Amino acid sequence: MTDNRANREYKDSFFSKLCEDKKRLIEIYNAVSGRNYSLDVEVEVVTLDDVLFLARRNDVAFIVEGRIVVLMEHQSTLCENMPIRILIYIALVFEKLFNADPRVKRAIYGTKLVNIPKPEFFVLYNGGDKFPEKKELRLSDAFLTVDTSDVSEWLRGFLELIVPIYNVSEGHNEDILRKSETLFGYAAFVGQVRRYLEKGYRLEEAIEQAVKDCVEKDILAEFLRVNASEVINMLTAEFKMEEAVKIWKEEGMEEGMEKGKEEMAKNLLVRGVSPDLIAEGSGLPMERIRALMN
Image (cartoon, rainbow, N blue to C red; front, side):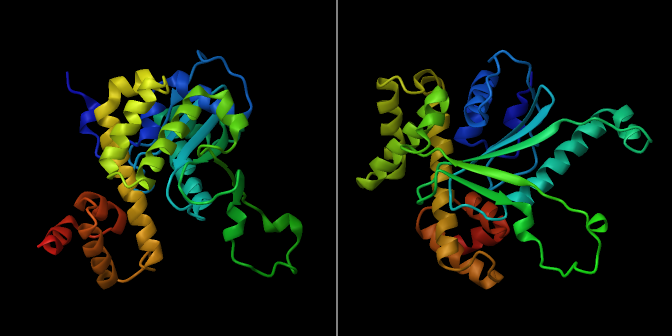
């Protein structure tokens, strides 16, 4: 039998790998939402397979009791355009659901009201930057300022999307971390990696040592025993991507011309960032990056 996961073009993140277990997924959701669903509650995962944020699969979308939840992990410098990106994401999720049921697809053009799952959005920040316990981003913050004084309130219309972002780095939002053994372990593990990096360990060494430490302390021990090599590979790529994004922003090349992107790609190659991550983050063709390597 063919393993479909092996054929996927995207790369899982450590966070999305954790969320493959539906009980862990509901445990995390209960912690951040304040709800108390049974870990055996029926869950339908509707994550999009072809939408990537920061070139990693760091999101999961699922339906639970009439709610459609988009849960995302964010490690590098926060993107202020998250509400716009989630707006596009949730629209694609609904399109996917409608296309899966021809009756519903036809019904939305009928006269009767079609009931749809209520959307909820949560972003979990676990980066190395200083960040508040909670931050709220709104889609309306991106709206152009337009004079509507001559338009009645009834005719203006309005679209809003609110994204709460919780800092789940070690030492933050401890009330949330206490409610979820998975989130607590996730924060502790990533925090341990960062401590080893601060001591001067190479990235791969820091992650390998953090795996050993957490297994010994029974932190995500079973998960890490089973998935140790995969976790090391995933987290190595994530930290390198995080560094690449930071460098990109610091150098002001985030929206630069092709020439600037190529110069930054050269710098990232020198720093040991893999060509595939540079291609994903910069948009440069792999052929061009291979040429820059020479």
